[in-house]
Length: 308
Image (cartoon, rainbow, N blue to C red; front, side):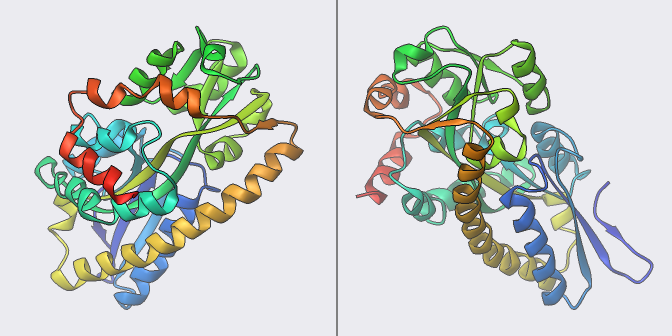
């Protein structure tokens, strides 16, 4: 792997992500590839590898550092191990709505977090949308007490783990590739993810209830290997940045559209989709922000101010 050139001097970029081919990030990367080809006159080709073909998310981030992966789009979970400050955007009930999230991620805070990747051998390019995270379970969830002792799969994300422990659940960090089987076998009882992940991974087969908690807004970080980036001429770097910016709008719009469509499909598949009062969940997790040492309080205040 790694940036490669064909016999006709065409540069090939291998871009990986952990979601299925029906996820908005797949569509975003395909659109990015089309834009890059157009902007470089076909000199740069983007090959997209979904569904962890280039490794689990943490492995892809490590690959970016080593230069064995050119480009990756990953969730914030594994990023905390490389850029701990990213944890601030994983706080529960932080964003009021998607527009608040976009304003923060495209603004000073989001750009600051992308820049912090530089010292880790990664070029942070943009924030795409994974979506609002919701609970899927085998039993109905109406209040925080209903999660007491529930074996809940989380990402390897210290903020998420702390939040669910605070509620009383038993969070179990687990690689995504193991989740479907573990749910089917009863190793875990529940998981939490955006609608698009729930739908494209057929979780209705192993989970009955989808509770729309929207407890965390999950972005996808669009990143490039600094090793690979530095091999590109300045005009191609510029083309890639422009293409990412344009693809960001497309990817987010696609995400919003698919979430609505897939939520209806999940109902048709037999999932019980429930909307609940999230106030008790907000109250139960209110102290998380002050208990996490990697949460930059100044950054947190800027995020909250952006929602006013």
